Amino acid sequence: MIEDFRTDAEASERRGRGALDNASGRYETERRFRIDDGWERHEELPPIRTSVQPDKSRRVITRNESPDVPFDRSINPYRGCEHGCIYCFARPTHAWLGLSPGLDFETRLFVKPEAPERLVEELAKPGYRCRPIAFGTNTDPYQPIERERRVTRRLIEVLAECDHPLTIVTKSNLVLRDLDILEPMARKGLVKVALSITTLDRHLARVMEPRATTPARRLEAVKSLSDAGIPTSVLFAPTIPGLNDHEMEKVLELAAQAGAGEAGYILLRLPLEIRELFHDWLREHFPNRAERVIQLVRDTRGGRDYQAAFGRRMTGQGPYAELTGQRFRAALRRYGLDKRRSELDCGLFRPPRPAREDRQMSLL
Image (tube, rainbow, N blue to C red; front, side):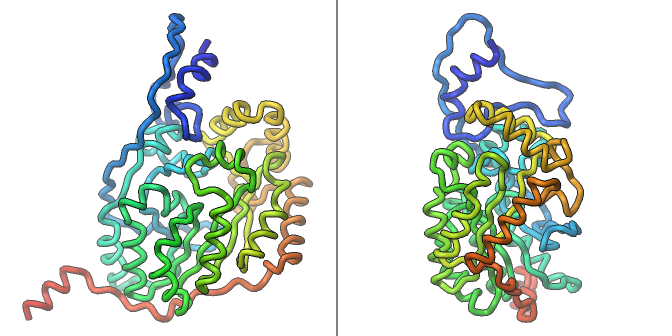
């Protein structure tokens, strides 16, 4: 009865969303879920609306020391992501807020309206040392609410003003809105952009990444960015064994034709709550392939659903994972995507002057 209820009544409510349910996060003392009361009144429910709340974080730059990621600092203008990608490894972070990594993650969003002001303060500190700042490492900086909120654009304006380098990862062609800032930065060697393209199949993209830009438009964005002189790469991430991995070579081929100069891939990661969310989603949308995909994923993770060890969490292990890596490297050579990665210039950085300092100087 529970399964029937979710299929019939809740389908309308979660229309356009990735997760199938809103299970409690791992820190909650109670587990809440809906059940059918037996009256069989499966009325159509209105779709869940997106809500946005302010996040008044006092710091905006997040630091990390992970040895298998190419950056040591990042900025996330938003918590949660309306794109609703079912595999998103950021989903478990919503549990820190007492919310569900499921539907809450893609419908209850948090925006950092004061992030640009906090960024100025942090960059102006005497001990600050310039290194590229990564955007889009947790949630997409160009998710739909950015059109109205424009926090990402304001942050980039701060970095452009003081010649600070940055990298951007996104699934949205909204990044093209900011070409007027990114193009001059690229001429100074201050910016790189990566588009995540996981599939060319519109049906798969629609159910796997329901509110992200279509794959075709992401490829168009790669071309527009490349034509503007902005170093652009493509990420085939996540690579899901038995579901989208057969598309790897074609995605890289089209990316190269669009002007991408680099490419990367990440094997599917299923930490914490993502495991059940992904398994439920897989059985709902691809019942004939679900168990095969799950087994292939486990074959690349030592028989488990996930391995968190540095160096393995991105690429996995075992014959299937090794074959995936070999295919990827061969495709890089075939399509000319194996060139040396361009480095960003940290030598142009000029610390900004906080607003309070501006006011003080005006009185002297």
